[in-house]
Amino acid sequence: MHHTLRITEIFYSLQGETRTSGLPTVFVRLTGCPLRCQYCDSAYAFSGGEIMSLEAILERVAAYKPRYVCVTGGEPLAQLACQALLQRLCDAGYEVSLETSGALSIAEIDQRVSRVVDLKTPGSGEVGRNLYANIEHLSRNDQVKFVICSREDYDWAVSKLIEYRLDARAGEVLFSPSYGQIDLRALADWIVSDNLPVRLQLQLHKILWNDAPGH
Image (cartoon, rainbow, N blue to C red; front, side, top):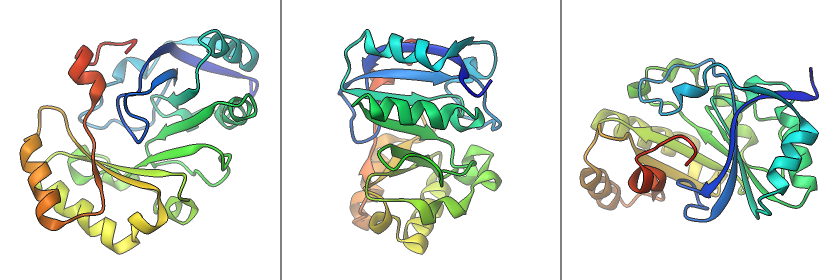
């Protein structure tokens, strides 16, 4: 089973988040997640999916002739073969990113992968699942993301930014508003007022396609 993965979908679209936002990207969405964040926008990936071999996944990805590939979920690292898939994608010459909840270890992930590590805020309902040991493994190729649900979440995220010097450890620190839960302009004003070394992240896919599956 280590040579197969359960896949919810593989599709080609614009990257809606992270430092490659707006760039055409193939998304490989793995099935399953051990977390239940209250704002989750991919609950359809919690179950179901199709068992695929690594070779079949690579063949599907190659058909799009992409430059960028994003492995996402669910929580991709919940499946053992995810690490092998990431390595194979890097070997194929793609620029590869991994979107992970931050609850599972990134220590063994191929260093060529840009690991987008979520630090769950109190407003997520899953703050207790953060694996802070992951911070030691961050490099300038990686990104740290906070989904902000409230002013309290913002203050908490700022405290973690300072405590762990995240802007010096990762290439990007992303503050993303929880869709429909916080005023975007307010979040922007807080970031500017505090002169934070972070990027305000908008979810382009929600602006363009209202977050429909397959986008």
